[in-house]
Length: 373
Image 1: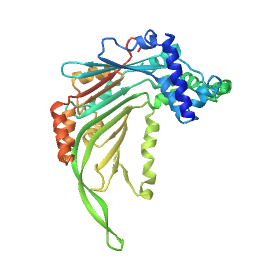
Image 2: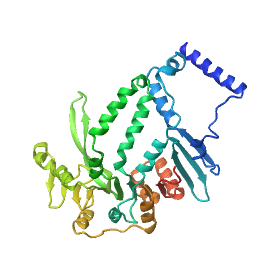
Image 3: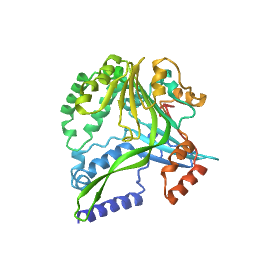
């Protein structure tokens, strides 16, 4: 009954607005025209705040209660100056290009976006990228701008049902939170420069436990083997708090024997070793050196860092992409599909893999602040 009333009310609203030529449109609004490209073959426009509100509505008492029960005006504040996003899609000769833009007419929120993107990748991280790698993901953001998030938090909480009538108290609590949290300390620990590189993937024979049952359902343990993909990767992050990071890396040594894991100080780096055949990777290495925190499966990467030598050098294209953008992603699709191909045992999966190998190009993604969006 409630659902039917809701449907009738919505239908009546749409019909009345249409007949009275009173339909609201975003066509001439700045938060639409600024980010939707008329030259695109297709565009998707998203009002982020509406997504939040629909999510809250779904997990609360339902839209009927708020829209038609008389409570919407009391408990809900519609703010139209939040972040809006658009994805512009272009079909070019041999590729599909997607361009995403985010924009807010709210000066404070726009300042938040600008502050987040006011960063450039540390060139010292580039030496971990090899043109022959499967792919990489580089991220460079300004974590020192965290204080701008409090404005966004206040805006979000003050538009939430039951919360907006206590906005004064909420703002005081958020101001207190801003005083207690040391944004500069967080920024020194993690300035915002990160890099993940997938160097390679190989098949490795691993052992696992299966069980067999007799007629009386008595369980019998059976050891079996199977091939799994073993990733060879490196994660690097910049830090200005080496002393603290070294304490974190050193801490597991105290509990390794008691907890039954093989974690050792190797002099300049730490190794977490796994029992042979039990995991797709044999060891995981940790290192804190020269303002970098490193996690890697590659001993070559650790050795080169210890010796202050550059193991790899990125291509000029990759280097320019990383240093010119806050986010840069590159995946060599052909190499990736070749590596996972042996794992696709069924004929259907093999056909899909073969088709992708023949028709699927590399994946590239870049993101930066341009023209205020």
